[in-house]
Structure formats: structure tokens, C-alpha cells
Amino acid sequence: MGPLNAALLLLCVLGISAGQLMFKLSARSIAGAGPADLWRLGLSPWFLGALVTYAAATVLWVWLLRELPLNRAYPFFALSFLFVPLFGGLLLGEPTDARYWVGVALIVAGIWVAGA
Picture 1: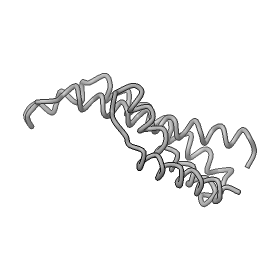
Picture 2: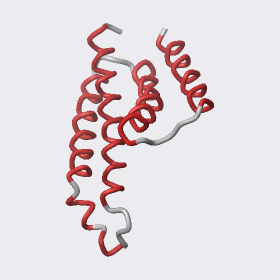
Picture 3: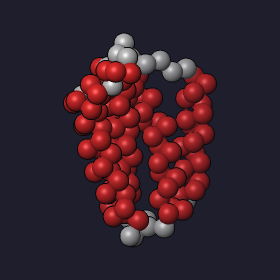
Picture 4: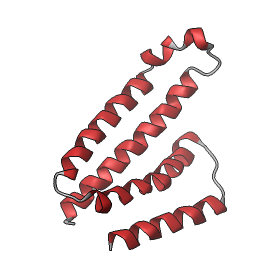
């Protein structure tokens, strides 16, 4: 896999990770809302941003699959297990513990082995 495709795969994973953070912000924006208030979700800028981000990442993913075998590209998506909690902690103040980070290190090692 060339450096451009690796960078685009990373961009894809970062897009999906950003979408997850926006989904969390969407959930926060409707906290305390009942089922009758769910329409507010569709009007949330965070929710709409997450949908657009996911759509863009999906289009990029399909474009990348023209060039890359699925079994080589897909393991990169496990990097979201690194990015989402990392940015969730830094930007949203969500806690993680050492045990979680040991698991993330194993996932990253697995990606390295699968990609080698």
C-alpha cells in the first residue's frame, strides 16, 4: 500500500471518529428529551455534521476500495478504538483507564501485524 492510500485510509478513520464525537455531542444536545422531542435530534447541528462527515468518509472509503483489497484496508478502521476515546477524553472530558489503553495498544499492534 502506498503512502497516499495509507494517508487517505487514516483520513477515513479520522472522519468516522469525528462523526462519533459529533454523535455524542448530538446526544448531549437532546439530553432529558422525551420520545416526543426526538425531532430535535434531526435539527441538531452536531447530528447533521455527523451525518455529512460519515457520508464523506463513506464515499472516500468506497473510492479507496477500488485500489485496495478489503482485507488490507479494513483493519485500519480499528484505529477508531484509539482516536474516539483519545479525542473523547481531550475534547469531551470522558474518562478512560490504563486497562483500556493496554487494549488499544494490542489493537494497534494487530493493525501493524495485519498491515505488514
